[in-house]
Image (cartoon, rainbow, N blue to C red; front, side, top):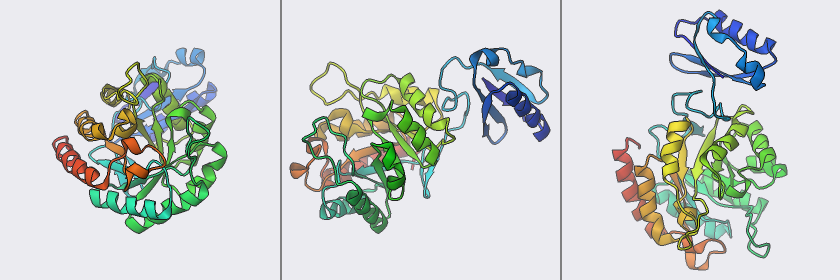
Amino acid sequence: MIIVMSPEATQEDLAKVEEKIKAEGLSFHLSKGAVRTIVGVIGDKKIISGLQMNAFKGVEKAIRITEKYKLVSREFRHEDTIVDVGGVKVGGPHLAIMAGPCAVESREQLMEAAECVKKGGANFLRGGAFKPRTSPYDFQGLAEEGLAMLKDAGEKFGLRVVTEVVNQNDIEMISNYADVLQIGARNMQNFQLLKEVGKTHKPVLLKRGLAATISEWLNAAEYIANEGNYNIILCERGIRTYETFTRNTLDLGAVAAVKELSHLPVIVDPSHGTGRWQMVRPMARAAIAAGADGLIIEVHPHPESALSDGDQSLTPQNFESTMVEVRKIAAMMGKK
């Protein structure tokens, strides 16, 4: 249930509403906007269905939400959430560009990549230190050594660091190096992992699962929000269909849908979404035109020798030219 308090509601009115919710054995989350305060009630559906909150002073209206996700819904928070990552903002009028190699391979490779994505206009450095690969024989990453390299490169070039968390036991360690914790597509429904990153209150980049519906994706975000962490950035990265020309099918319709259903920012990954570097540029343009709050793009100084995802990685030159076009479209969409 969502309880919308009237603009004239006093703190005493709100306290009585909270007291009633607690007395029924339910929990709640507050969302305080510029004019109204919204109370999201969570708990036993049978108890919630019997609540008569409209009778309380200061309550403008009480709405029963049919979707299972509550806290990330647009009904709970009408205003767009803007995630602040150490002064770099994601969402609203802000354009977030995350770029870098799929995997950290060496200090030289990472520093070269970081320098070129910074030059191209990125404000985040992406790179994998732990790589969940389909085959156990593929490159699995440099682990903590790679994390240290990411942190050094981020500090040197003034970039915030985004890297993936694979194991919940590594969250504390990775949090010491990274600014944003990425949950990959394969772990979107690893609910225990979602709960644990929610407890950190660090920004989380939540990628859509390989075959996840939009509702399942938002419910995964709900696990994080339910731990009190609203610093969630959604990422559309393509879903698996019967098409074989591309690695995945990039669902840009999901961007528009998420904007309608949720207050969370959403970015797009045209690299994994297509699997072909030739398609990254046009799909990056299309993503921003569809209303995405940013992009996450794989960039490698030497894609032909990359240990992971070279076929979908842009060269520094291609990344720079892509960003020139993307920023023109972003300006028309009211983003800077």
